[in-house]
Amino acid sequence: MRRITIWAFVTSVAVACTASAGIQVSNAVIAEPAGANTALYFEIENTRNEPDRLIGARTEVATAEVHRSFSEGGQMHMEHVASVEVGGGEVVVFEPGGLHVMLFDVDRLQPDQVVVVLLEFEIAGDVEVEAAVKPYAAIVP
Ligand SMILES: [Cu+2]
Image (cartoon, rainbow, N blue to C red; front, side, top):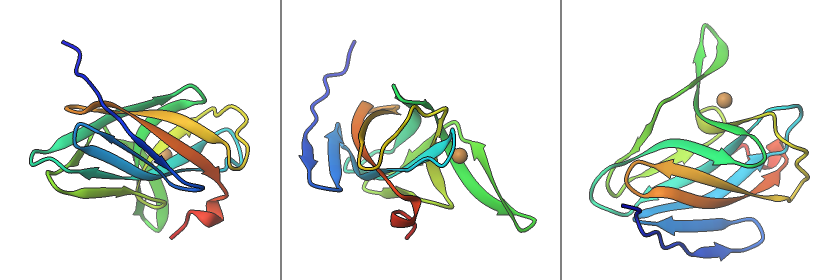
């Protein structure tokens, strides 16, 4: 049975927020690519009482994978993660140096371009997110 999804967009110049079945995604932003690959960052809020999991992502402009950055032996590395749990009532932040959605082989992205990405959740299903392309320096906290 297909889950019925209701989503709402609240869009301003730099912020897009999407809600779907208790999952809200905000502050979605893509780092302006310097080469073939880049990353998508955002915050997930789970407004339900039970956990959900981000299990994947997809977009027409790139091949997308959920990743985690970590440092080991003084060097930064990253790896694919199968899922990221967002507990009931919790917020999980995807940000430089931590969790991110890796975008491989991106097609020509321009500054301020808005890209549609579907984030795939175990319970909420696909959550559509609009992410603006920004210089990396504007994203680093
Ligand atoms: Cu990565």
